[in-house]
Amino acid sequence: MKAPPCSLKEVPVLTKHPLRPLPIALLCLLTLAGCKTSEPAATDTAEAIDPKVMQQFVGDMQKTLQTNIANAVRGTLVGAVKLSIKLDQTYAPVACKAQEPGPKLASLLPADANRSDFKSLAAAVEAQCWKTVYPPVPAGAYDEDGTVEIVAPLILMPSANQQPPNPAWVARQQQREFFWQQLLREQPVDSIGVAIIRYQANSQGKVQGCLIELRPSAARADAFRMDGGLQSRLSSACMALDLQRMPGFAPDPQGKMEGFALVEYAPWKVGRP
Image 1 (cartoon, rainbow, N blue to C red):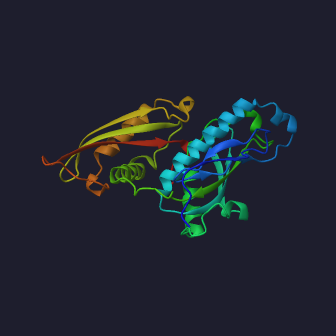
Image 2 (cartoon, rainbow, N blue to C red; image 1 turned 90 degrees about the horizontal axis):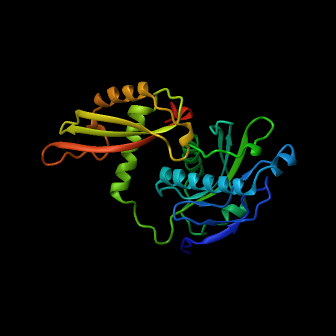
Image 3 (cartoon, one colour; image 1 turned 90 degrees about the vertical axis):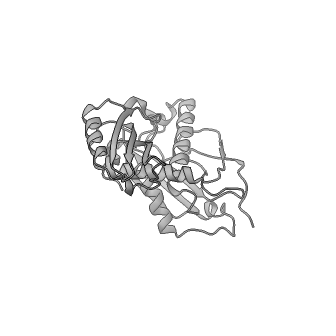
């Protein structure tokens, strides 16, 4: 039995707020079977939320998870998992838990799917959950403790016509990870943004020029703050890098290499592997 091609399927996405089922695309790398929040402490709070606002949030959350989880697993992991995400009032994750899927969710996988070890799958999903920048949550969605829980049943599997990852795309992902580990992982930050790293290096990997630009994140432009100190620290650290260690390092015939990487940062990502 082959994996089903990408299609559309209507599933209920929220139980906290009464919305019609939304059409969810069964994507090639990631399927979101739906999102739901935990039951509210008071129903009048949930009823105060504009359905259009909640629908926009659900759509933004689905897009965020699709983009981040798909990039994290790179099509290498197959399985079903129920991901529980708890966000605080700054939209930062305070809990990420990947749980075994129920029979209904697990049955969405083709019978002949080569399922990954669940511990590996859960670890990859949880790790990315902690490093994701989430969209703003409607104020009325929060529980009494000031948090909101989103439960996202996920199906990760390649489609029947999926092509092997493009080598250039894989290299970009690996280089982004390299700069995260070497430059940004331990940098203290108090805002959310994207560091654009433009570099030049010689054939030995010695950095000869590095320009750091900070820009707002598309997901949370409201939380961006220009940080000259961060920019300066990143520039200094970049000049000290050995780019021979970077995946895809390949000088041109003149013995030089130029490139760039975009790395997203946020306070809760600091120190995350």
